[in-house]
Each structure stands twice: as C-alpha cells, then as structure tokens.
Length: 196
Length: 196
DNA sequence: TTATACTGCTAATGTTAGTTAGTGTATTTT
DNA sequence: AAAATACACTAACTAACATTAGCAGTATAA
Image (cartoon, rainbow over all chains, first blue to last red; front, side, top):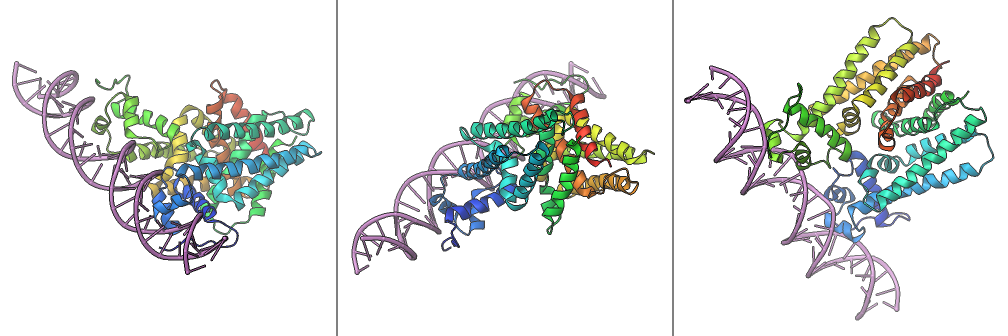
C-alpha cells in the first residue's frame, strides 16, 4: 500500500492517533476495529503495530492528553485573583473552545473513558474527580461571597459540564456552526442560572 | 440451571429486558455479551433465544419504550394552556423523574442508541429530532411572549437535555441520593438561566 | 555503498462474539 | 391422562476481533 504520509511535524504515530480519535468518536471504542482504523490510515492492520503498542494505548493517549490539558488550565484559573463568576465564565469558555476545536479527542475522552484498562482507569477517574471538585470549590466560593445563588455546587458543576459535552449534537446536525455564538448563548443560560 | 423465575406480572422476556438494560448501561451495548446477560438472568446463553429474537432487539425495545414515553408526555404538555416557563419546568421535572426512576433504560436510550440497526435507527433519530423541535418551539413561544431571554432556543434545549442526562454521574458517586433536592437545584439553575 | 533501523506486507493464532440445531424435560392445555 | 407447548440444555458454527511472527523492501546514516 505504501507508507503513511507524514506531513509537517507530525509523526506516523500522531497521524494514527488523530485518526483513531475520529473513528472512536464515530463508532465508539468497542465497535471500532483496528482493521477499520488501518483502512482509514491507508495501511494493513498489522502495520499499525509498528507504531503503537495496542488499541487500548490509543484510548489512553487520547484521554490523558485531554485530562492533563484540562488540569493545566484549572491551575491557571485558580491562580488568578478574580471573582468566582469571572473564573467560571472563563472555564466555560475554555471548555467550549476545547469541544469545538479538539472535538474528537474531547468527545472520546468524555464518552469512552470507561473502556480504559487499569491502572489508567483509576488514574483517570481520580483526575476527573479532582477537576470537578476544584470546579465546585470555585462555585462554593462564589456562594459564600454572595455572587452566586445558594445551590448545590456539585449539581451546578454537573449541569455545566454535561451541557457542554452535549455540543456533539451540534456537530452532527450543522456542518457550519458558529462557536462564538454558541459560547454566548451558553454563557447566558449557564452563568445567568447561577448569578444571584 | 432451572427456569427463569417469573414474579408478579412480568414475563420472562420482560425480566431479560430489564437485566439487559442494566448490563448495557454498565458495560455499553457493544461490550456487553449475551453470555454475560445469560449468567445474570441465571440461564445458558442459548436459552435467551427462546424469548428474544436477537441482542439488537433488546436495544431497540429499550430505546423505543423510552422514546414513546417521552413523546406521549410532550403531547400532554403541549395540550395545556399554561405559560412557557411553566411548561418547561414541567418537562424538566418529568425528564429528571424519568432519569431517576427508570435510570438504566433512559441512560441506555441516551448513550447507546447509535448501535440501533436500520430501519430502527432512522426512526429513532427522527423521533428524537421531533422531540427536540417541539421543546424548542415552547421556548421560542416564551421568548416571543417575553417570559424568556432572547437566546437561541436550540441551544437552550441542548443545555437542558444534556444537563439532565448527566445525572448518571450521580448514580455512580452517591448511593443514597435525593431526587427532589436534585430537581429543585436543577430547576433553579436551568429555569433561572432562561427567565428574563 | 554498506549497514541499520523503519515500516510495510502476508499468514496465522487464539479468543470471543452472536446465533442456530437438535434434544429432552417440565409445564400448561385439552 | 394425553397432547401440545414452553423452555432450558449441550454442542457447534461462522464471523470478527486484537495481536504476533517472520519476511521483504526502503529510507537514512556511516
């Protein structure tokens, strides 16, 4: 079939990784086969193993890329000296951006992480729990400072995160779609729902 | 192994259906095997086929049960002579109740429908699209009557539906959990985010 | 130009999947 | 009590899966 074409600075492994995210998003991790992935990449299935260790390696690379990216941004936000509503808005915008720009990876990370194998599974779950707790803490701070309504912070985090992860329905239905407009609408609804 | 025990008014098929919803929720449709399902039911895998036609029949029964239930409730709400915010609140409460009470079925319907086979897949997608459009129409009516902020109705529906479907995280983390309190919190955030 | 690491191929392996066939027994109906 | 139906079993089948072994050609560096 000929080699995998590498362009720019991306290695063959990175190409496979990118394509696998698209495939996993499309079909789901379990339903996606290495043969399909190989065909998309333009190579025989066995040849993939010159570049990757296993199918599950692909999944955990995708999930941990996203997770560490999120964690790093949370560090940044926490370090700021701003009020809670501002921080929350910033987080929401970041999450929507991530969903729009790195759609496949974020989507797979969101919906397919349960197929991670140990020890990655436990590790991932712990990172996810931590992220949510940090998010909830910001909301709680806002409640204490009376910027935000008295609500259960954990519920608020849940609503926000799942509302954002739902953006996938968009990608399915509209090909051309305005990320900025979406952001403004979601901010209005979500931040509006929290504000006192 | 002996027969499947039938209790009350539920047929053996209904027992299998219920258990399959739990299994599909737990492992995902593709990762769940008929042999596992059989073991849970207390029977050999082949014996399941005395009651059901195929694995995919189970999935489509689950999905269409939920879909027709939702559609019927939408009929009811649309027929009412109430303002939009009231209708929306009623819908949200209904959806949360459904998520809490028939958790497994609703969850599977939400996350695993893409594994439906034709012609069920197209049919299901169309029902889902219709439900969302009807929901959006109620919101648009509210915007026209100035009960609701000027936002994109489709985005609002998206936010609401996905926020609710996110309740699964709850079931995972808390064993004892108060459906009513959850409802009030979510209503506060979501309806609060729409209200002018 | 020769040596080495890369990267593709074909072929095969072992596992697991959904499902069917055929048989015997328990339950229900007549 | 006899006949019919329901249902569970064992055994097997075919298909698909991830992955490995071994080999051949190709790009890269010496």
